[in-house]
Length: 581
Image (tube, rainbow, N blue to C red; front, side):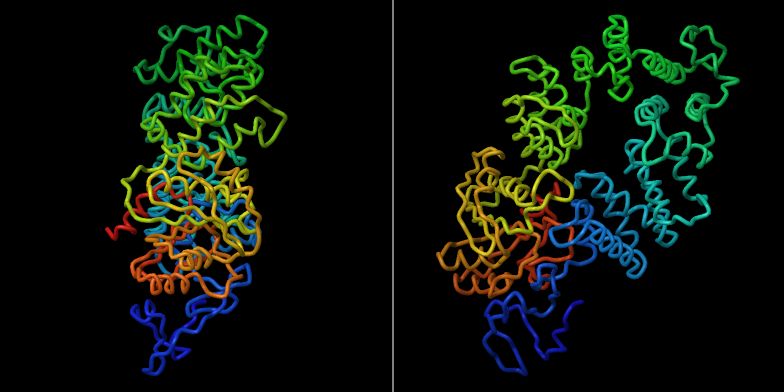
């Protein structure tokens, strides 16, 4: 709850803030130093026991869309954090009547690859589809063709809708129409590939969804595909799926798209019969089908996935996301040995900026792949491998290439990373990476763009960090791990720069904003720095590393900005803010 300035008979102007004075009953008085365990006007108690500002509901929505709430934070459990974010979305949609803005924001973060995972945006859209007014519900359901790029996304959305309204009597007309449109408006050959690759998820299958939405086929190819999918008795279609029958000799409308789709379905059915990795015919036939129909790993029997030849064929046309996910497996079967064709192909793809952006790979996905691959073992299971150093270097380069590239501002940046205890937990959207490791990776993105930068790490003490822009991510993380953790004082970067007379144009602080230890609030420390250093335009950028509702940036100060960490558009936002575009 925001504290009212009127309630304390204190008013504040921008000139008074920068001058370090309060105006009380028309008289100027010196600003009282307020410790972080006591509130400034507009602040609320944070989870660490100190006081911070509250981000707006729409900014909290953006944090949730990017960071999610998996695993919770150092202070708050996953369930509590999920409830807090869901309540905030509900407030936006129901109480504040901002449903359309919520839908547009969720679609923007999903479609424009600003978030590493689709689940948060699908959850938000499901909330809008169930809780919003008529216009909001239509907008949410109408966005499915954009945000549900693969069937897995559609299954997740349907599952969220069911969980939000567990006592519902069934699907309404709008829901049935939206799901039907997802199936009916795709090219039939693409849809056939998707249906056979992603068969089921979250307790739902395509058979379930087609029956629930009552999709009415528009063309013969859709009629055949839907019959195949719902597994009818095939009175009219059984002969079409018998691979011993010649397609040209069959009695059915032989339009090119129908024939193409049918050949794919028959290839999938034949692949189900190939399961012996020791049988030469099974391997050769599987290789031929993969090459002809560009079949994916999911189309193959698990027994075939021990074959290097099979993986080599899959790799030739493997999507970028799948390649990142399977680097360990392919290395373990010696497909990615140093200087091998397979390894060279992986390195070439990872360092191709155009292909990275076309593949919609989010920076956090690459960071997760890098962290997992260099460890030489998976998060789950017993799979182990010896990492290829060339691939590690390529992943390191790919991380920076995946961010939007911007021109330098030529300003002086102090990059301050919170290494307190609360930053030791994993990032919600990346369970294997701690918040402070992730903040170091993000800081390096700025360091590689801006030549004038200085690294520090802080908890209840501050330490200079010997990091340079030429270092790899692994080296940076190694330096970060040398810093001992402690309590949180987010004012230290400003007081440090003031004490050492360091001229700074931009303080960029990577934190969860759960500050409580210092004798002065971070926002007040910045104002004091501006005054003492005679740098009135010095700015503060807070990179939020948790999807909580707190920030150290004063929303009333135009020289302070709160950004979601790992928003892929962050470099553009930072540049515009710094240059006041």
